[in-house]
Length: 462
Image (cartoon, rainbow, N blue to C red; front, side, top):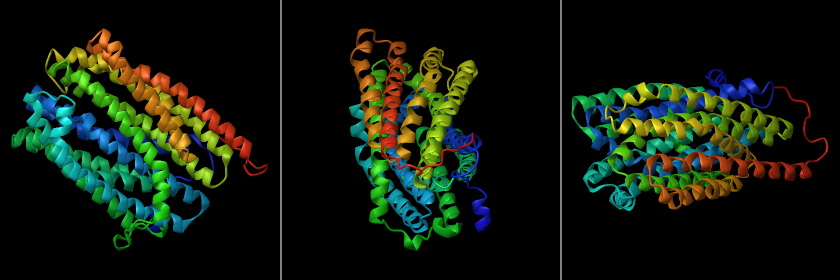
């Protein structure tokens, strides 16, 4: 069993880097694609079989759900960095403590989110101006979805544990199965049982339960420091400190990023149900493309973290450079493909002739320029790998969130059209990518000054 488990791992400390980065990044990206298929299946089924009002009600939850989920998913990146750094140092006991801490923390975070979701559903929807005629359906989806927060958190933290040692394939296999389950349950609940919004939310909840339990079972069958014993689940203070130091700034960054999107969602809501439905459709393609970015960003984080633990600075830098070459190119290709296929793809989600042209426009202006955001995220990921998580978080809050909020109150206020509003996305990515590049260069300059002669190996291969 031990050998079988090791066969899934990537040796990040030795050998050629480029193929290993691709081997790591592509399954992570594919896993993200499949996670987005959960939402896409919800949107497609509800849009085709429950109507535009139900579609808008589901879409009104997109950024509200992301706001809190992203906070704790960001914390899971801290588990990735903490464990990967222990791997680089050869600290098996540190790996064991951090693994159990990560899983215990995921369950605690999930329970907090579940309670908050039940208590705050009406308040948050009223705060963003969800139209009264959509409020009951939107709240119902929100509350059912938040009942599934413990398995969602468990899946993300367990995935972070496995990815810290280079195992990106098994989380992908799990999502293939749970994604198929989600689609089948969507059809059963919505088409067969006419449950509409409640049906798509329940299908997502059950598929997330299945995926999280599968990963927990994989960790229970691991041997060595990654073996998960449910009886040993507890939070180790030192491990928690490492996870929080790296993960909390990343989580705040993602959460505030979602907060800026909520500001944009409120502006979209002011344009009416057609604009809301178009956003619900088009954001599916943005999330698919963003998951391509996450694959390379997490590759930068994990490769840098392991090699930093091993004291190989040259390999850290080369990992970042390769991710910066491969990530934006791959993201551009995905975005271009979605734009070329926009007509049949949007038709899968809606038949409303008024919704389609707005969705096409957003795909061009937002999805088509996600490759710029890839530069931003990869610089951020590399700095997190060095345990410098606060710097990219602060830059993203000021660059992305500040620019978007400013645009809503200036550019959009002057010309309040949907197309003009969507320009907030590429503008904010470009501003932030430049700032992250400057910050990374400054961090690297500081590390060069502190390097000891002879500490790092100068010879690396692509």
